[in-house]
Length: 397
Image (cartoon, rainbow, N blue to C red):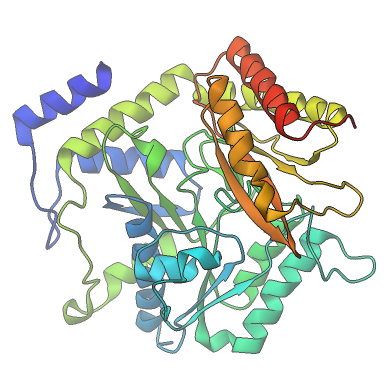
C-alpha cells in the first residue's frame, strides 16, 4: 500500500520526464543520495537504468569511458567468471559464464573472457598448500597478465553467484581480488543485482569481506520488484573523471526511462521501508536458520552433496548420486525437474539448475525467500525440501 501510494502521488506531480543532457528530477536525486549513503564508502555517483542487464551494460561502457578519459584507450577487455550471470543483452550475455545463454546468439561480443570462480565444492587447479580462494584469485591475476594489463578494463563478479549455483566464496577471495585489481589498474565491478538490498544480511554483499568495488550494478530489490529500476553507483575517482572531460568527450549514454520519477519514488519508499524494518538484520537471522536447517537435511539424506549459504537469505543444495565422487545422475532421470515438481506439490516454488559433471548431471536447488519470511515459514520450507528430495532420491546419509 505504501509503495502504491508513493507511485500514485508521484504520478500526480510528475509522472515522467527525460533525464537527458544533464536533467534530473527530485525522486531520482533523493534516491541517488540515499543509495550513496548506504553503499560502499568510496562510491559517489549514481546512474539509473530499468534493470540488471542495462546496469551491467552501463558499467562496461563506463569502464571503457574511464580508461579512455585517462589516456588508456586500449583497456577495453572484461574478465568475468564461469557460471557467473550478468544478463542477456549482447554485452551482458557475453559476460555471462554459462554456455546455454550464448548458444543460439553467437558470436559473442569480442573482448570478454572467463576464468574459474571460487566454487569450493568443485574447484580444480589449486596448487599444493593453496586455498580455493587463493587459487581462484591467482587465476584472475594470470588472466590479466596473459592478456596484458594495458588491455583489461575491468573484472566483473557477483559477490555471491546467483544463477550459477549460489556460490559463496571463501573469505580470502575478494580481499585478494581487490588487491590484484588495484595493482594492475583494473576496475572491479560488483554485480549486486541479486545480492544487494539486504539479501545477504548487509545492504550490499561485499561488506562481508570489507572490500570496496569501483562500480556497483544493482536492480531487482531496489524496488522489491514493484517497478522496473536498476542502476550503477561509481567511485569518486570515476565520477570525478567523468566530470573532468571536455564537453565534446562527455559520457554519451542514456536510456529513455533512466531515472524515471515514478520508479525512483517507489524505490525511495521501498528503501525507507527496509531501513525502518531493519530487513538486513532479519535476513541475517532467518538466513542462519535456513542454512542450519539445510545442513541438517544434508546429514539425513545422502543425495545432498553440498549446502551453500550462511550469508542471509540466499542458499542452495547440490544433489549428487555419490558423495565420494560427487557424480551426478543420468540425465534421463531428470532428477532436478522431479524434485521441483515434488516441492510444488508441497506449496514451495523454487528453481533448479542442471550441472553437467562428466557424463552425469548434478542438480542444484536454489532458495531466495522473501526478506519478511517468518521462522515458521522457514521451517515449513525446510520440511517441504526434505520430503521432496527424499521422494525422488531416497537414501539415508
